Length: 155
Length: 167
Image (cartoon, rainbow over all chains, first blue to last red; front, side):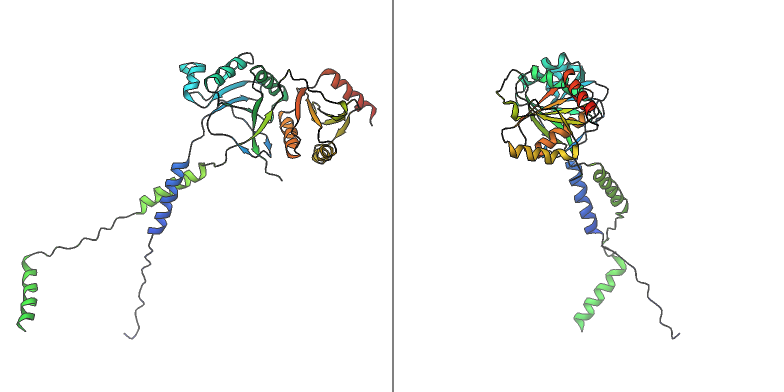
């Protein structure tokens, strides 16, 4: 009788701010995410201390894999259809031979003069294919190009 | 008194007949919604990569250009199949250098001779990564005037001789 009944405290937490922030972040990530396009070959990039970022548009990518295959790709679908035919326009890049490379590169540059040439090579690859690609570019009168690298972590 | 009675009487009287409109507190269980939101949030946070890869710019001189270079200011860097570097100026005999020492060496040399021209000769069988590293070192030391050439058989022979003569 004399004992006071302990009141049970119902913990009610206001979740509204938490949910607000969660949704804010969710919208942010959903809107900023651009899914990485599927590549024909997986390339492990070499690392460097280069300061410049890869431009998002107007790039022509020449990829060479460790087994010596060369792939050419451009970022615009329209140009891809024009260069490689309608059936290949959804592919990110198509395999090319060293002989085709200069004329294709030149053709792409004539359609879009703003196109920048980037070379993507696997770090395990040998220098030979890189030399061939650079010679092919010189044949196509492309003396300025960029090598895609990863930012090196060590300092 | 009458007024109070009236008021109270009316309230009580009506309660019996007319149902008082209850304000319904809409209580929605938000838990599944929040669950899904967090699931998506984690997914997007984990899959997003912000950084684009870096690019290293290269300007190769046109193949037909023949610049006048004095032999003494031409630094020749030969990279062999095994990835070791040999350097020499002009017609001197090549000397090996380690990758780690390259940065200091290049800084020193380019300070001593700002008009220095660098020619990198790479073996076709050497690693592509070593070419990238070489250009990276050159960029880091502000040696911007360089060219790349293939390592010829005669270069290989010269290096073999150096390897044979040095213990």
